[in-house]
Image (tube, rainbow, N blue to C red; front, top):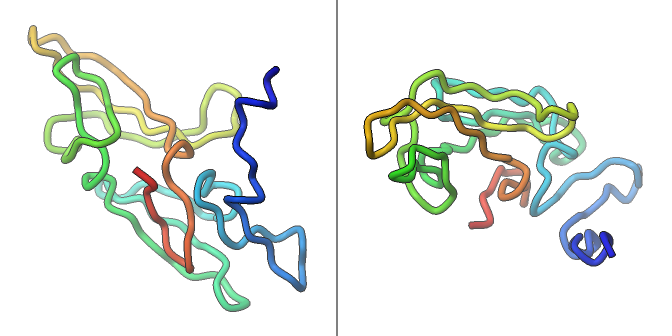
Length: 134
């Protein structure tokens, strides 16, 4: 069944006590608890997150968590994807829901390959900061 594939979000999410609809901390799916999400300088994720009754501007350097494989694909657990990639951009997935990182990188044969990585799979919010759980 599909629901067995989903994590128990109660373990991941914390909501504001005064406004139970306001998600203030999420270990994954940061985009559900942030606003004004953007990619700057081709590798820095910037967003506003709920913090102490207001909105705090925070950043996360994606080069610390994302790299490219020998096949030219973006991968978690490597580093410095922006050094070897061009046409780096962030946009929503085809369904308009999840933030995706898109980039063109060279594979081991020297061919340019366009790939994408779902940022919501790893990035969350903890204590008013963007974090990567990998």
